[in-house]
Length: 362
Image: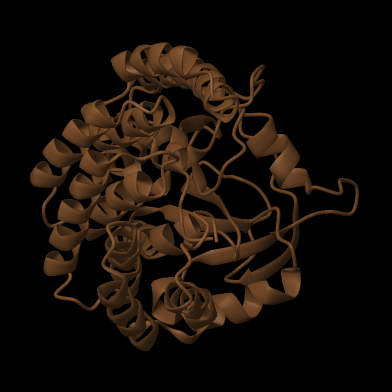
């Protein structure tokens, strides 16, 4: 419950996380004529029957349950507000919605952060929605939010995550100056790289689940070569997981210490490393000492107010024979915890009071 899978923190490139994992064999590409709009209902704004030469269109696929969509909507709205008087039309195309009755209340709650048109997908012929099939699936995109820009010629000029959409791109497309052919080559290369990263990530995941640490280490090294520098921290955390799995606690401890020093104010990272060491099977005294050092650093950084950090610190204290301190620290964690987390931490507290170490996955 508490321990996040370190592999989940292996940050794939921004384009892959944001736009979703590519589907192989895409048939809708940049430069192709845009598929027809197939809308079941316009929730907000005037209906758009078809694309015309007087406008440029952004068709953005989203859903009410999608966390990244909620983050990107205000940004897309800013784009809409900036260019709406320059022939730009923005359509928020709801797709893969679990309950379409949630859409209208969601839009109303967003208020002035979501003022562009909003449409529901047509599911009269396709269970998954005509727009989802003919746009997203056809373009090899299975993650939202994803935006398509349709130029004045009615062709797909750009595909990507709305947060990566720059004003200069919109301006150039509006002015018929955007080089779609060059962008298509760049986009195709990105898709190929993402497919390679997806394959390696799958191999890494399988190796780690099977505790095949040699394969995991080799695969991570291959993956690291093609990942952006922004993924350095996540690669480091995954490498630490491999070292712990191998029971190479000396190397894991050294890596944890150096990473902790480099990210001294990053409380989640500090806590994650300390917890990983504290819950490792057969952890030695040296490893525990490092876990305690990092947990104390995390507690200092959070000024003693983070219940998860305190929970980690209590575990380390108990494992190093400081039972009374562990009980006191865990009680503080319980007192600070939100209601949904109290029962979990109370169980830990009861275990410490009874002289028992809680299971690492509780």
